[in-house]
Every structure is written in C-alpha cells, then in structure tokens.
Image (tube, rainbow over all chains, first blue to last red):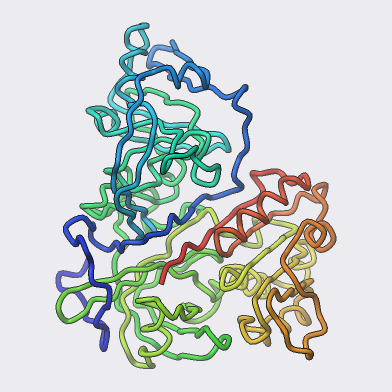
Length: 208
Length: 257
C-alpha cells in the first residue's frame, strides 16, 4: 500500500456515518442484506441434515437437526462485514455457540487442534484458527431476524463469526473438521486472506 | 479464481494499490460508461475478474467498491464499465466526474473462480442481468481473440436481460461479436415499452433457459451474473433443468453504489 493515499480529484464523499467507530476501514453501511455465493443455492431436506465435528484423531460427533436445536440457544446481535465492502449493523441471529459444540465433542473424546475447517453443502470450505471460533465469538445459526434463516443467506444453518469478514461465516454449513495444521479453504486458496480481520483490512493474501 | 493474484505463486505478495491513469471515457449505455485505464505494472488478468477501486477525499474520507473488468486480457489497458446508480457514492463519481488524464486508485485483479479462458473449454453459457453482463462480455472479448478453429471448439451463447433498449450495455459491440465470432445472442427486455423493439420481452425464465441454453448433456460451463434475485432465480432454474451445480458459477451484485 502507498504510504500516502492518492487523493481523488473532485471526490468529497457524501455518506455521513451514524456510527463511524463501528465501520472498519474501506467499508460502508448498508441496510440491505446482499448475497454473495460462488454457485447455486443448495437445497437440503432437514430430515437428512446433520452437523458433524471431525476430531483430530479420526473420531467424530454428529447432531441431527432436532438434536442441535435441543442444545442451549443463544441470540447474538452483531455487526457483520463483507469483504465486498458492505457492513450491516445490529443483525440478530439464533443458534448455538461453537463453544457448546466443541465442549460436547471434547466430552466424547473428540479433540481438536489449533485450526478448524468449516465444510458445507455445495462444497464450500473456509479455514479459521480455533481461537477465532471459541470464547463466545462464533455460532452455528439457523435463525435470522426472528425467523428461519433463508436459503440464500445460508439456511438451514450457517456459521456466524462476526469479527471476521463474512466469507468466514460459511453458508449451508454441515460441520467442522478440527486440524493441527492450517489448510486453506475455498476463497483462501483463491487469493483471499487466511484470517480476514476487517479492522486490519485483511481482504487478500498478503494484506497486513 | 484460477489462482488469481499473487505475482509470486503461493507467495504472500500483497495486492498493491496502483494509481491508474484514465486514458479514455466512453458511453456504454444510457446509464453506463466505460473507463479505459492505464495501470502501471498491471500483472494481467483473466476474463471475469474484477478490481477494487478506492477513492480518497482531501479530508481522508475514503470509499471502496469492486468493479468487473470489461476488457479482454489481450486488450491494451484495463477497461471498467460502470453503471451509474443515482443514489450511489462511487459510481456517479466514476461516470460523471472522472475524465481522461485523471488518476484512479485500483488494485487487482481479484477473483479467480468466476473467471474463464479458452483453454478451460466449453460450451460457454453466459447469462447476464443488467450490468452483470460486463464480466461476461470480457469472456466473449477474450474468446474473440482466439482463432476461428479454437472458437469453433468452444461455442458460446449469451442470454442477456436488460430493462430497456437504452440500458443495454455495449449493444453495438455485442452485435459485432455475434456476427464476427459466432456467438448466439438472446436479448430480452423486461421493461421496454417502445414499439421499435420487436425482439423478446420479459424475464429470463425456465423456458428461455431450456430453449436458448445448452442441454445438460452438453455439460456447458455456465456463468451467471447480475442482481441477487436474478442470479438466485437463474442458477436455481439451471440446476432444476439438470445442470451440474458445480458447472454453474455465479456472481451476485449487491446494491453497491
């Protein structure tokens, strides 16, 4: 990046921000909820749906749709930030904390390492440090805005990791693979940043 | 993204911001303009990729947006076709204020999944809505640079939905590509009321995709780009018609301005 920004002749900007402190660099606030996906929206029957955590040593634990809903529920209200530049404030979700899932997995002897890869219907994957999906900062959600999560936004269930760019919040998620070593996911292999912290503007590989 | 960016494959080469120079500005439709940029040390791109544009004001305020590249990798310069959104913040600047000789900060190319080149093969089924046609035109322009024999191996069809005739982007160039490079083009207008348009009207529906697209047995590579509801509808219909989901690549335009 250039040390001193290039000033665009005649550009003044015109979007006063209600909450500039909530907007990461390069982002703008939208009231819409745009959709970004690389392929068609998959459709899956809830009867066949499950969520599986694969441990580092080959063990796994699996929840059906109903079993997942029987776990303690949380209703986070969070700001979300897409790498395509939009941010949306105060989005409301319903789901289960990833801590709850990992604790249940550990109780059954399914242990993890320093990284996780989320895998999804449609073949999408994304990788995250385990530290980014624990400590009350990540959820598997099936509710949005008081209703069910619509398919184009990742329903029946998606990952929600609001402190990272939203491609990390994998849509149509079906489980987590726990790994000792990092392994790039779909967009990460295609040149996007490994971690994706919006406050450090980690959009693409090689960004700070 | 074919392994899009890094100049050093696999390396952590940052995608640098570069100050491009606007070489030319020309109308692409009643609502869109094409900016031809000279980008210093441009590493080249694949048809379908985009760039980020950053505008910084005197007081430090900045805005960023993404725009698809309209030009073929073989063309001189990097062209962006920008549709003006009346309530937008960046697009009115790019279409109304920017003029030849100005500088413009860009970085890219970005994206390697919604990208195509002749060696990736076909048939090529392109379905665009509104300004979503821009990356698809880059693919057709790239294909036009291949020899006739190579083109014959990769037949191409474009289904393009625009609101009105005056909103059609690069109509003359689409006609040129159709005539000179054997592209089947189906243009449908969703809100045209004028009598001079005697072609197809209405939205892209299942019947049109079945009739104008390739059958699933031909295993076309489908690229669908446009506003979110358009892409949702078209991609869903293609899968319902029997096309493999992994052969349907999409790019959805949010309401960015």
